[in-house]
Length: 245
Image 1 (cartoon, rainbow, N blue to C red):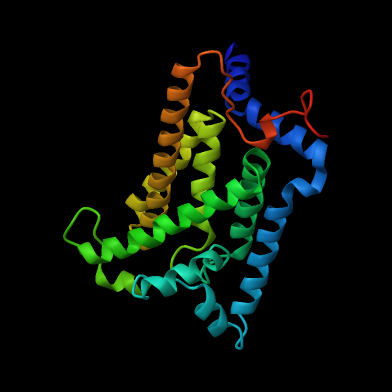
Image 2: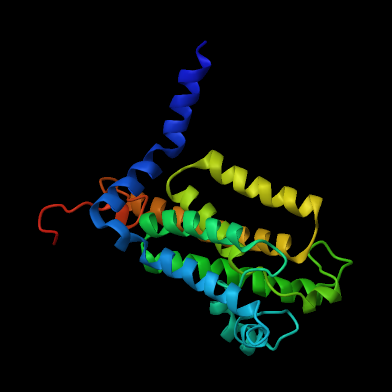
């Protein structure tokens, strides 16, 4: 009989700070707080429609499709748009829902530019891993078969996974973050393909960044024990005295 209150307390501990931050930020700024998210959703939908047209497939591939066999400078030029090129063999509504939810929460908590930086960094980590994996070959632990060099990178999913893990770390939603990581590990165990491996590479890169931030925060705290440490971006900073409204 005590399970329900215990579960409720656990849910409040896990998601309460995140929910409060999102609610306050949306109440303060409204739809403007989601400018990047709505742009990303609209751009992904537009790219999906374009690449399914006879005239649009090739331009989308030339501008936003990244493969491990591509020259590195060309791949780096295509990587920013590749965040918004959904997979042709998967329903686009799933990608749009993921972007709306995860990008939206991240933009509210982290701010526009940090969200974009984490999303790009996670996607870039997957892109670079594919090159390293193909170079190592299938006989090694992190290696990939040569055929994966011709497979298009994951699109928005690596960015979504990376952002989810980063926000969970920022808001100390440890259980949710662990579930995201576990789901990606199970994905690779069930269906070991390039997309699943790139998701794990994105998570690894984000965890490294989180670890560095945690270490730097502890160093600052040890030097100045009285300093308050912020655990979120713009959402945690209220309009205090002397702050412009």
